[in-house]
Image 1: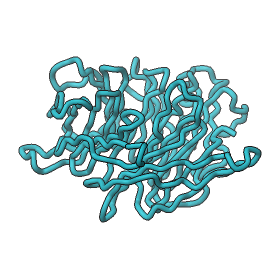
Image 2: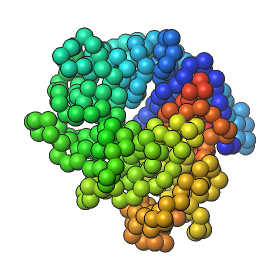
Image 3: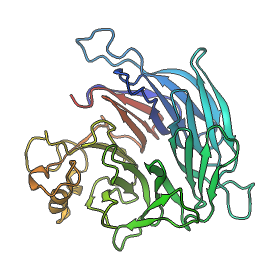
Length: 375
């Protein structure tokens, strides 16, 4: 892809996240965090995108990302979110949840708070179980793990605010907020679950699943403005679109990657666009905007076109694209998919999009940064 630059970082990268910009800011993102995994010593690092476009505004100049600071991380970084402009929350394969603070005056990272073994195996608080997912809604943090446990933290409290010990009998792989008091989780037996944190007890308020399927779901994201629209991805590489107001089955199943889908993200300000990444080394941009030229192909440029071939796919897409993704209007059933990776690579483990910018991390020990996503 044009305007994509690769930065070799000598570590397998498990997570990449843009620092959020203030709502009032018109700036493009200028700083991202990365976390590593499967290395002798794992780290959390902060990177500057450099002076994108400042050398010659008439040229598509893309500066090399610059390392600002880094800090050791206990265990693999299994998830990572910015809590605010200065604080980053990480999940660890050791079961630990940590808050790091970025000190902008001297460009350093420090450990601000930690919850050791927030996730642990039954009967042992000393034997950590991997914390697999976190989500932040400052000052609240929610974590899920291999132990089937849900934890609720507050950034200003050293104690865990609430634990749902037996929330799930299987591994929960990811979590996101649906509303301020409700969360969604996905698990290793193909279920999407809704939880109301105001309720006592350990039962979800709703359970959704793909009919007759128990394929693990690895990732999920909620539409930024239509909160009932949810996207998930899993072991079979499928992209599932759900309407959590109605059916307990997905509205559409889109055959996609050749291997596990690790992350799915709606673009935060242009949610007619979805981005997914996979173990197969691809990173896809799904464009369901009404501006897409009307042409009968589902795929324009991009690896894996042959995998969009289910007999029900055309009907499924036509029935499911509204707010681009849930419309019954067949004239909006056009979907363009482009693979953004410039060449074949090892697993693309993580991606994030903000404004015109995209960042992703790979097992090939490289971080890729792109600008001008929509030009």
